[in-house]
Amino acid sequence: MKTLIVPGEQEFLDQFGEAPEVLAEPWIRGAEFEPENGTLGLSFDQLENSIRFEWRQGDDVVRHFFREGATALRIRTEKKETHLVAEFESGELSGEVDVRVYPRIAIKDSLLRK
Image 1 (cartoon, rainbow, N blue to C red):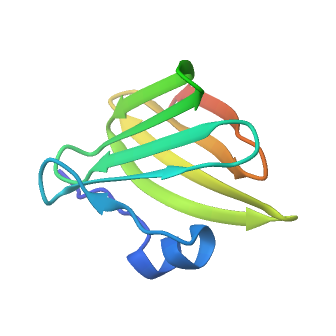
Image 2 (cartoon, rainbow, N blue to C red):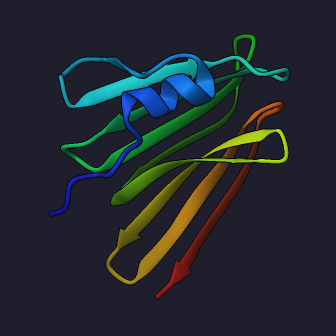
C-alpha cells in the first residue's frame, strides 16, 4: 500500500498561515481554517490513507466527508482562491474532493469508475 502524499509543513504555512498538528498518533494530523462562511476541519491519516473534511457553521455541521483510499492531498491556488484537493483511488473507482477554503468554503466531489 502506498503512503498518502501530503504537502509539507512549509507549504501549509505559506498558504494558510498554519500547519497541521499531530493528533492521536504521530501519523495523524489535523488543522482548522476559518474562512468567511464557517470553519473547515481537515484531518488525514498517512498510515491508513484516509482524509476527513468537516465544514461547520457554528455548532451545525454543513458537510462531513471521510474517505479511505486517499492517494494525495494537494494545495492549489488560483485567482485569489486557495483549495485543498484530495485524490482517491480504490478498486474500480477514482475521484477527488476539491475544497475551496478561501475566501469562502465550497466543495466539489467527484467519484468515477476507472
